Amino acid sequence: MNLETPEVFLVNPNTEYGYREEGMKNEYIGLGYLSSYLRSVGRTSEVIDARLRNLTVENVLEKVGRSTGAIVGITLFSESATPWVSELVNRIKSADPGAHVVLWGYYPTLQTKKVFDLIPWADSVVKGEWEQALAELVDKILQGGEWKDTAWIAYRDQQSWEVLVSLRRMPEGDLDSLPFADRHADESQISEILMEGSRGCFSCCSFCAIRPFIAPSKNGLWRGRSADHLVDEMVHLRSVYPSIKRFRFIDPCFFWSSDMADRNMKIAKSVSERLPGIEMVLEWRVLDLQEESRSLLRELKKAGLKEIYLWLESGSQSVLDMMRKEFRVEQALESLRILEEEGVFYEFGFMMFSPWTQESDIDANVRFLRRVHFLPMHLMFRQMDVIPSTPSAKQVKGLVPKGTTGYFTYENVPTVQKLKAFARFFEASRKDFFEESHKLYEGVRAEYESGNVAVIGVSRILSDMAIEAFEFCRNALQSSDDFSEVANRCTDIFLPKMLAVRNDIPVLAREG
Image (cartoon, rainbow, N blue to C red; front, side, top):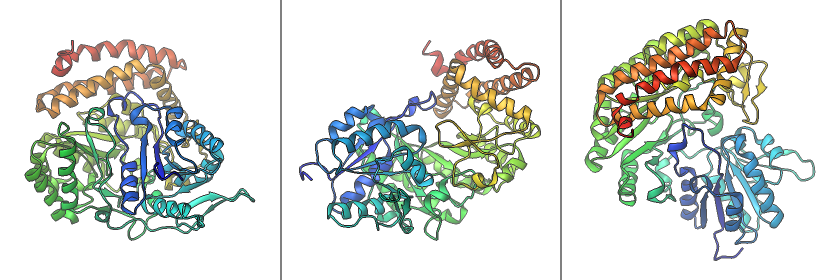
């Protein structure tokens, strides 16, 4: 190894964006945690965020090719990224057979054998949370020792071709012991700063990959950083990126529960005192956003809270129960009511179609969504994918691979199955319809978060249009099998109606 070059290259693949993610380009914070952790144990690394910098495989090879016997770590979250990663790995190993390529992320953790089948040149996989395992693996490789006994990795036996997995590693229980994540984005490349205030989740949703990914244990469920440690990092980052005031927390349940009331309130008050003028986006569970949470919500709003993401998923109680969501539909509506009364914008997860969806569940979803004021069009047509290794993968019978996503789909009753198939067709064939709808939604978000709460009336009109468009398609499909005709008719009717509202959204009206 040439000591003038990094000992480890950390790569985020360059994958395509959908229209909803196009304006959310950001650095991948996971690479930053790996980089800083490796440095804390005396190892050097270089972050290559190909997605952020729009790099090709050739661009990455130019960087990695500076060294011989390189260790190259690549993050992989879904099967859709495997063609890009496979090409990169094959070319690395062809040029330098002594290089060690290690993969990590949700996809290699949950579908280890399949990853080795698709990317056979890879040497190893780090499973679950990766900082400690990767550091240990790197240390053993660089010292010329036996690396296959590193805890919580997988590799392919070269004789039997069998995929072998080492002993499980407990995830880090004290997140304050981890160094702050390195930041590799230039200020001009990002519009918000990603933060991680906790890891894990105490919920046990049947469709979610978090629990199987982190391998639950006494240290493997929800773990939160202390208020001081978290806010210290935010203050540091405010000095690094002085023109960026928005912090987006990527934790699935940032505050966990009211049992952490002292910590939660301390975070809110400390941010308010030490970071005036910032903005925050958080994710929150329905069970933790009820009436007793209102005082915390108000304190957070003083500190700059602009938006909350709620994991709602369905308006049907029977489907929520199958998903193991642990809350009632009435509690979800209560969460939304509180946010609207406090003037906080919300996004939410929602799946119109699930393995358990009947016509009556779609009716329940529609009734529920009629009471929602910020409803993006695409959620009317969204379906749940089944992720391998999750409880749903064991619950649902007759799973069918969903293209090259690495996920599974399923059969519903005929009328629901037809509507579900149409939903996929519609979003793929009439992107113009969904893109224009999304622009209007983003305009409403910008206005509301800037203080123009009256725009909620316009949002209600757009939400009603989304429901009307869905119901139009649903009714039309009862007498037609021509998906293209139904999609085009829906677009011809509802796109002009949506665009007619554009001038009622000031930020969009100013654009002309």
